[in-house]
Length: 212
Image 1 (tube, rainbow, N blue to C red):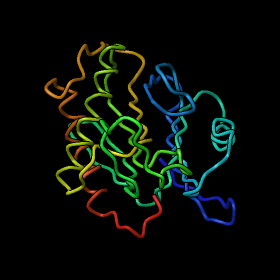
Image 2 (cartoon, helix red, strand yellow):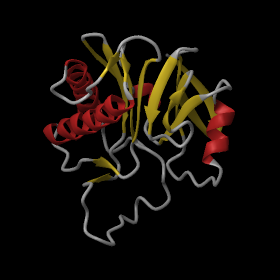
Image 3 (cartoon, rainbow, N blue to C red):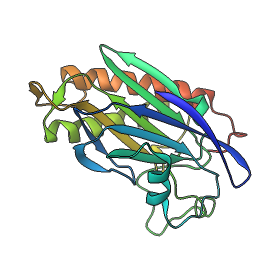
């Protein structure tokens, strides 16, 4: 993983890039490269808090190295990313909590502060060293999300996340496939602990002066 910087709209913005190369499968909720499929890189790009471009996919593609990859955005400072590991699993989180929210909000609820910023503020990249079935990958995303919410609540934030968080789980394309990714499975438990540790540390370090 490498950290780079660029200048856009007069702001110095960072980006985290993981270059995996061939032989990896990923599941993601990201704008670019979302879904399940073969991917070679992951980009977590910081953008301005009032991001209003109408071409986010093209924007992300222009920032990536080319080929098939996953691209996500955040208003959080990516140079303050947190890494945690457990039993061979690695989790990386950029945590911004300017507009925390509960998943199940009342019908019609919309925080006016969120309107100008439709980009993720808590982005999580998780790398698992074993192949997984499609079902196990979906289960792993559930586990990442549950661990994230647990960490935020334990850190004292009354929320399950923000309204536009993104997640990516990367696994090798070849090898025996794990059937389960839930929090009590062997690899799901490691995913949960790594994500929980990364998000909790990121949440505890976050301050209102942060942009994300």
